Amino acid sequence: MIVLSVANTPLPHESTQQAIGYPTLFLLVLIGALVPVVPTGALVSSAAVVAFHQTAPFALLLVFVVASLAAFLGDVALYWLGRRGIGSKNGSRWLEAIRRRAPEDRLARAQEKLDDHGVTVLVLSRLMPAGRLPVMLACLLAKMPLRRFARGNLPACLAWAVTYQLIGILGGSLFDEPWEGVLAAVVLTLLISVVPSVWRRLRSA
Image (cartoon, rainbow, N blue to C red; front, side):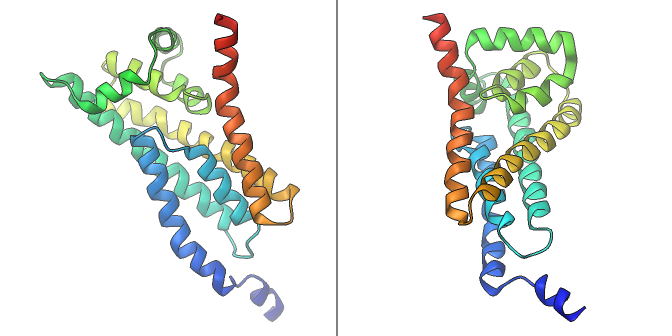
């Protein structure tokens, strides 16, 4: 029992990493949801690699909880700001930011899918590269209530956190050194986000 308790006790440097890492992960994912320029998927995968190599119990679970909660709160806040933008006379800079990052063709497809499948589209939109904002804008234009959006967005954020955490666990399991796993996870997540857009451009060329 003593051996088990010692084995499950976090090392001093791991405790420091957790004290700094989890709040930082939460803040960056939250900011990335509000200002979609931060590669939040790569952040979650990198955090999962570090957690995979730690001896602290529940490290991976904490990464999942922190990432999914931050993504959910960020999405809900952005949607609330978007609804304010639609309702206000002069619009909102947040709504304009969403519009600029949602091409018209993708917005049209998102509106069609929203009409056909309802809030279940939110789950897929979170997993598809650059799919979140067009679907969110389609929900705004359809005047979907915030509560209904939040109910559909919760499983979307959970699925998103699980997906990118699995990428991190894969990277962590392939390499002995955490930095190697982090590098592999970042490269893989960037490829996942870039390849579909490159493929669409090649098809349209």
